[in-house]
Length: 111
Length: 110
Image (cartoon, rainbow over all chains, first blue to last red; front, side):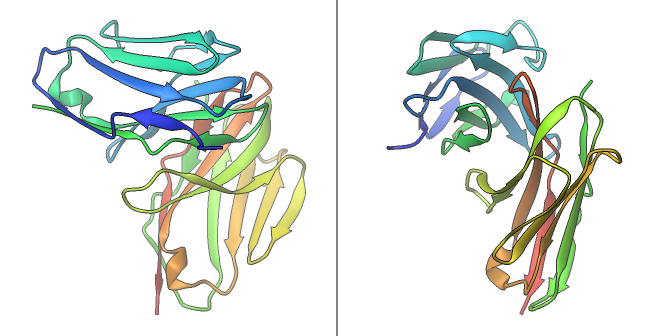
């Protein structure tokens, strides 16, 4: 198994632009998590899906952030419009019932 | 609000010593507990999981869980410089919701 696959690995964008981060979970996993990691706030849970359904999105910072999981093998996290304070590493993780396996992350820089 | 608290460190130990990392959590409904290791610039990787009270040993690593006191700890015996990393405590409830502490940065000095 190739593990959790995230793309892109790095993204540099200008303030105000739309950013879309992508994640392919491990085949057969039924839960998918999006996390944001910064030095100041550590690893924050943004949203998590179970069987493609959003279960807890209380960590999504504001309306500029949205996440979708149209099927079991794909999820997106969208930021529109992006702001410099969104700069962080965004991780996707998937799990089957228990512990999560992380992707390599997307390092987002908004200038 | 479900909280997971860790001492951010840095924690510094000499090579060969025991490193002790601690974590407390607020949600009494938590069912599963994990320790992840994260090297600088890399993604977190699972090193230990524990689900019931007591100790669980895996090589040089021992996880300890006390649900009554709502804490979980990780002991690393015979610490090596390669153990230098940030250690993240993760807590999962019965809805599969998994939340992390801020991490403890460990440095093992040769």
